[in-house]
Image 1 (spheres, rainbow, N blue to C red):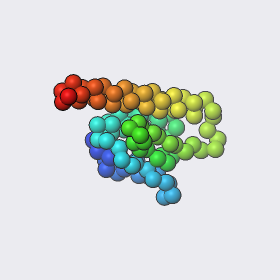
Image 2: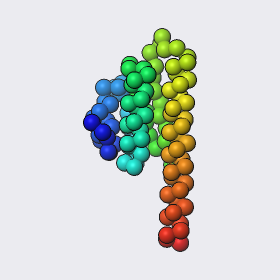
Image 3: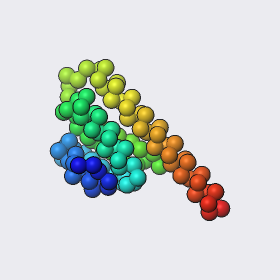
Length: 106
């Protein structure tokens, strides 16, 4: 299942969200396919990760994961690098969208 909305993400990944965490919160639908792809990649690297929170914060993307205690640092580092790449890509996309809006409407 390819996700198109925040509700799709929750449905697909709810088994990864512990009951005491937020899961997916306030994510623009335009980000969803990229987040879905990232989570699929992470699941290949570390099948038993948890998704504690995935949200929009101050116009940027934030993803907070939980890792099993025995997870090697190298795996955590690889996953965190993948998250950082998506954070930067979404920030760039958002800047471009704002600039385009200004050109078209101001």
